[in-house]
Each structure stands twice: as structure tokens, then as C-alpha cells.
Amino acid sequence: MVLKAFFPTCCTSADSGLLVGRWVPEQSSAVVLAVVHFPFIPIQVKELLAQVQQASRVSLAVLGTWCHRQQESEESLGHFLEGLGAIFSHEPWLQLCRERGSKFWSCKATHQQRPGTPGVSSEDHVMLIFYDQRKVLLSHLHSPTVLPDCQAGDATASAEGLAAIFDTVSRSEVLFCKNQFDEGPVRLSHWQSEGVEASILVELAKQASGPVCLLVACLLSLVSASGSCRLWKLWPLPFIASKLSTCEQLRHRLEHLTLVFSTQKAQSPAQLMRKANMLVSMLLDVALGLTLLSWLHSSNRIGQLANALIPMADHVAEELQHLLQWLMGAPAGLKMNRALDQVLGRFFLYHIHLWISYIHLMSPFIERILWHVGLSACLGLTVALSILSDILALLTFHIYCFYVYGARLYCLKICGLSSLWRLFRGKKWNVLRQRVDSCSYDLDQLFIGTLLFTILVFLLPTTALYYLVFTLLRLLVVTVQGLIHLLVDLINSLPLYSLGLRLCRPYRLAAGVKFHVLEHEAGRPLRLLMQINPLPYSSVVHTYRLPSSGCHPKHSWGSLCRKLFFGELIYPWKQRGDKQD
Image (cartoon, rainbow, N blue to C red):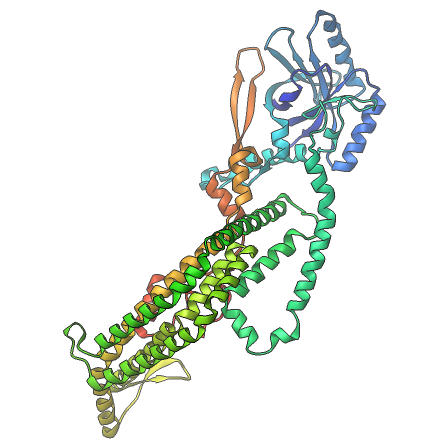
């Protein structure tokens, strides 16, 4: 039988003593956590292990002895260590020894009594695996990726064994608080033997985090209470708030702030990582917003934007007027229905005139509006981008109206033509059963149907051309809004803290381990070095990506083309969870 002994690399130069750790019978593995040095009293060692076991819920025990033969006088110590198995009984009993002035090791695992052979001791082969205790303690082991069916069972068993080792080290952090500078009766060697690692700034931040979180949580509760006031529920305020990207982004950031500054402690590493990702995302968002704010308020750029906005709007209106005049003539040599063409053209020209009047009416207030929009960047770049998206929607509201008018008129004619086409075939749509049934029509009905079908067919090209032009304009505006929403969604959902941790300390996000052979000679135990495989960047983004309320495509390309062909309204900018009309 081959036993696996996981030995920390920080204890390879430790003085002789006892091996303290956990025995994992399912994996036939011994996880060594520390070395207890001489002199010691056995009852005090047992009391220490009982205290650590009560605090960490890990069954710790004395696994065996460790002998480091640094000098000639210590050779007699090995005979004394062999007799400690009677005091600290454990099956199997490990005996690890490092030869003096040599890189060779000797490892034995003895059983005092074998079933069926009382009084006879036996030995097992030992595979010695070195691991970095600090990295294993600080790392978080992730579940393995899905493998083919032939390897799924092996992968599950291997993952369970690694999880047991990582869990043992992480839960035994109480044991690592003891170091050789303590005044206690037991001296230990582990990764913090030279003293507990600490930082004054980190300790001060920990002490100040409690009152700060409590204060911010109280302020956020006041904001939430004011937001739930009945005044904000009066129509049409809820309807307007549901259509504005700014309100959605502010609500999203308020949820993040409430979670980050919650006084409840994170229950798992995943929750802690989520809080850290949210905090870093908000800090980066505010930093980018302040950068934008300083750029806007330098060199009077807000005034320059306000002065350029009115001529730009006039230029867009002039181009739309030229486009409508082109459609009212003979666009691309097509023969249109002149009466319907003139009615639609004058109708849309009147809307452009109203829009120009609206823009010029707002021109004295545009600079102040832009100043307040720039000031909102102190809340974050995402808030400023959301306000920009809402302003773009207001400035292009006439294009949206043109699209809705054209789509409704085109959809009405398509529905009329499809209904009249069923009339020619002796069919009708059964509303109750939601299916097409046979139906008999008299001569008058067929005559009226033929007349209406002919009228709609000859009017369809004119309506379809207007619908096509305004749909393309609307899709252009929606594309710009979609790019803005994608940028907001990227800032909101990108796990920046996890990516920074993967870049600077890749061992913190472990996907698995790999082993390097250190010694493999006949008559000597096999010695391996366990190293942590970091999680790939794509898996980091997929695992720790934050939930976002940004825009997401609701339709496939086929569904989108079908809706455009039949004139159904599309809302690709709507927020997740909204219902369509």
C-alpha cells in the first residue's frame, strides 16, 4: 500500500520534533501542518490539538516524528523519537528523516498491529509530496472543468482528494497563529513561524471598516426609504423611470453599495470575491468619471459642446428634409403613389419643423444642462454614459416617431393583405381557436375583397419605402445606444479584482495542481513538488462576472428579420425583465 504524505516546504529545515496534521483515510493521505519542537510535554501538545480542533472543526493528531540530522550529536535523537509512538498512538505512524549534509530523505509508515497478525508491525511505502503552505492556505480551489465521460469519474475523485487537502490547510488557520516567539509551552514550525504577517495599514483598515460600513449602511437605508416614498409611485413617474437608463443605473449602483457596505460578514470565498469585485468596479467607475469631469471642465469644453450642438441639430434636420423631399419625388427612379407620397412627406416635414422649434426653444438652457450632466460624472462614468444615452434618445425622438408611424402603417397593410389573401383561398382566421379554418364567401364579399386587395397592393411600395428608410435611421440610433449600453455593462460586470488577483497572485485562484518529480531512485521514497495551476482568464471572467442590468439581445437574427419584415416594433434597448408591448 502506498501512502501519500503532504509535507510543507517551510518545515524542511525545522528542528526535530513531532508531525502534527490530519489523516485523510479516504485518500490514504497524511497532511502535515506543523512540527512541534523539543522540549515539550505530551499532555500540553494534546491540549493544544484539542483547542485547535474545537476552533477549526478539523480532526488534528500527531501523525509521527520528524528527524533533521544537522549535527552528529543529534543522531541519538532518532532512537528517542521512535519511542514516541507509544505515547501518541496513530495508525499509521510516520517517520520522516532528513539525512545530515545530504539531500536524501527517508520515509517510513509503520503499523503496530495488522489484523490477523497481532504483535507484528509492518511498513507501507510512502510518497512524499511537498507543498507551499502559504499558497495553499490563501488559494481557493475551483471545481474542475467538465471532462469526457471516460475521465469524469477520475476527475471527480481527484478533485475530492485535492479539496480535502486544501480544506484542511485553510481551516487550520488557528494553528498558524502560534509561532516560535510565543511564550506558550509548545513551539511550532509552519509558514508563519517567524511571526504573523501583518500590515499597519491593513490592521487600521480592518478597525475602521466596521464603523464606516455601519455609517454608510444607515445612509443607504435612508436613501432607499426616500426612494420608496409614495410620491414616486404616482403616474407617470414609474413609467418614466422604467424607460430611463439613468434611473436603472442608479438603482443598480445602489444595490451594489448596499451589498458592499453590508455589516454581515461574507459566508464563503465566492461571496467575498463578489464584494471585492463590486468595490473595485465602483472605484474604477468613479475614477473614470472624475477623469471625464476634469476633462470637461478644462478649457471650457462644455461651452464648446453647447455651441456646436445647435448647428449640428440644424444640419441633421436639414439632411432629413432633403431626404423627405427626395422621397416625395421619384426616389431611385421608382414610380410612387403621388397622393399618398405627398401626404406622408408633408406629415413628416411638419414633425421635423416641430422638432427644430423644440431644439431652438431649449438652446438657452443647453449649456447649463450639459454642465449638470458633466457634474453627474462624479457619481461614475456609467451614470454619465447612461445620461448620454437618455439625451440621445430625447434628441432623436422625432426619428423614433417616424419609425413608429411607418411601422404601424406598413404592418396594417401587411396584415390587411394577408387577411384578404386568405379570403381569395376561402379561408379565415379563427380567433377563438387560433387557427385558419375554411369559410364560404358570397360574391359581394369577394368583390369588396378584390377591390381592397388591389388598393393595398398599389399603395404598399410607397409605404414600404418610407418604412425602410426610417427603420434604417432608427437602427442607426439604436446601434449607438447599444454601444453605450455595452460599455456600461462592461464596467458593471467585469470582475476587475479577480482579474488583478489572477495577474499578480495567480495561486489565489486555483484550477488544480501539477506535480514535479524531485527524486526518484531505487530504495528511496518518491519525492514530488506540488504546484498550483492558476485558473484561466476566460474561466475567471465566466466564474466571477457580476450580474448586470444592461441591454441584452432578446431576439435571434432570424426573429429580428422576421419582425422587421412584418413591421412589428422592436425594442432592443429595453432593460432585462421588461415586458414588451
